[in-house]
Image (cartoon, rainbow, N blue to C red):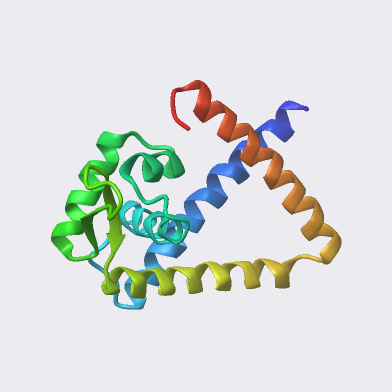
Length: 156
């Protein structure tokens, strides 16, 4: 890869990442969700997804988000205080604590899912089916790459 291509690739990865976060944040404020940071929003999303499979323990959530348990604890404590999450003991093993979304969290998660659906619809309008296949394959390779890099650094 030539230096010019490397510079463009770096620019686009950073530029796209920042714009997605900015768009996501402004969209939520426009929808009246102003008491959550993006990190908190993504913790809620992870809890809602993992609850469906029964993997909503702190370690499961931290692994899903590729963050440390300590970072997750800070976010969960804040979200419990804000009324978005609760801690519950597992019915089968009282020693196990599960993180469970409240109705308020479920509502915000639905809004968040709608944002992602709208984002994908916009991307779909902008590129052809053939380009979509290439983009999906490329992003899958990038996802594998970054997942492996996270594992090397001690995160799963």
